[in-house]
Amino acid sequence: MIRKPSKFRVHAFLWHLLCSLIMATLSSAVVFWIWHPGLLAKAVGVGHIFLMMLAVDVILGPLLTFAVAKQGKKSLKFDLSVIIFVQVAALIYGLHSIAANRPVYLAFDIWRFEIVRASDVRPEALKRAQSPYNHLSWFGPKWVAVKPATTAEDKNNRLFGELSTGISPGMQPDLYDSIENQWNVIVSEGAKLSDLKKFNPPEKVDAVIAKYPTADKFYPLKSLGTSMTVLINSKEKRILDLVDLRPWEE
Image (cartoon, rainbow, N blue to C red; front, side, top):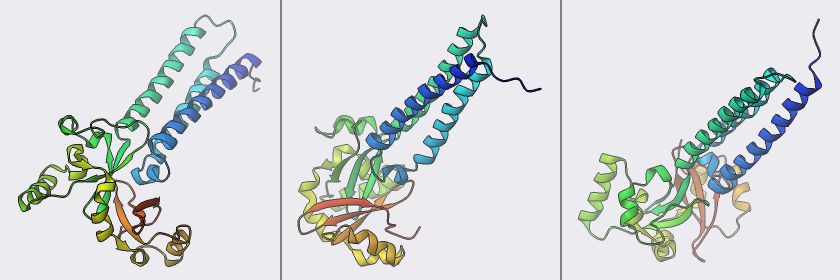
């Protein structure tokens, strides 16, 4: 015969579930609205990992509470303290890992934009950087541009440095400049919107572009996850938006 769970056990489970859902909602707001706004969560690939971690954390905690909750149990406070401690510690560890890899800059360099994560930036490059590029934002990534190489030697050093170390110019804040100062380069190198149909279904390209009638060029956004497309208005020198179109063959 299956025994009906006590009201105390059910209430303990529901209260723990409610608190876990509130914690999950607040964490999701930070991860998806502040650290990875818009399409950046998909571009970086953080969505599935975080949501899976959150689901496990939110479900396991209340279920363990349901399993141990018994009115009058002497060790109940200790048991619940351990469950809550492990649950919060797991969430903090997950958020710390995501924070360490949060996008801090969307850096333009020659022919592309690049997502620069906090973990990509070396402390020594940050120390050499001028304000406002000498600190990493906690409130979403900033659009910046890499200063063009001024000599052939400088250009070669950047190229070989990226090939040998994996550190691109976009990951070096000491090379940053305001994007407004680099619009002449951005305007001259942008690709035609029609080229997007080589890598995406034409109807999808048309549907996306229809939302941005002033867009006339695009740039790839390089990412370790899913590459996206940056639409620009070259005449008004404005970045319009990041859209879910592939800028090259994947």
